[in-house]
Length: 152
Ligand code: DAT
Ligand code: MG
Image 1: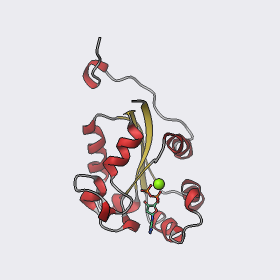
Image 2 (image 1 turned 45 degrees about the horizontal axis):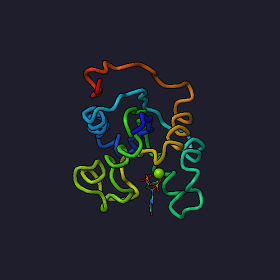
Image 3 (image 1 turned 60 degrees about the vertical axis):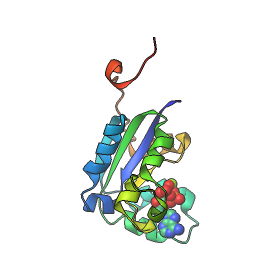
Image 4 (image 1 turned 90 degrees about the vertical axis):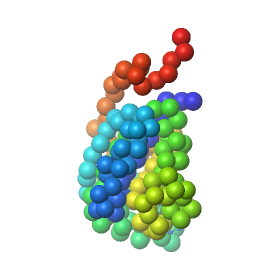
């Protein structure tokens, strides 16, 4: 499995509801490495770029309006299989289809208020990281003997 980076974002309802710490805690507990963290109020243009693939969807205007309703917390997490495992930790797009134990499965019931975002592929992760962190993200080594099992 590959060492990957993924972009995880707490959406305005997640920030409003005080779920930032809970979401960070799950990625920390799982063993992922935090490379960047920021709270910001995005512009409409920024969000339209982030969700460019969904521009033709009927829910797009409502999605952008929701995402503009308050600040978001963006972060970059790194580690083995971070993109796919991050998505598993989030749950399904529709919270009602999300298993209990996932973030969406534990904290929401509305697809239009699903509290968090996670990149869906390595390619989109790298695009999103560049979009949200144009200044770049951290690059540092953790103590491998504590965070990784190494067979040698
Ligand atoms: P995900 O966030 O799981 O990657 P997506 O990229 O397909 O899902 O859509 C982005 C967001 O758009 C999603 O988190 C919530 C909203 N959305 C998706 N499908 C929707 C729908 N059918 N009705 C309302 N909002 C929807
Ligand atoms: Mg998506």
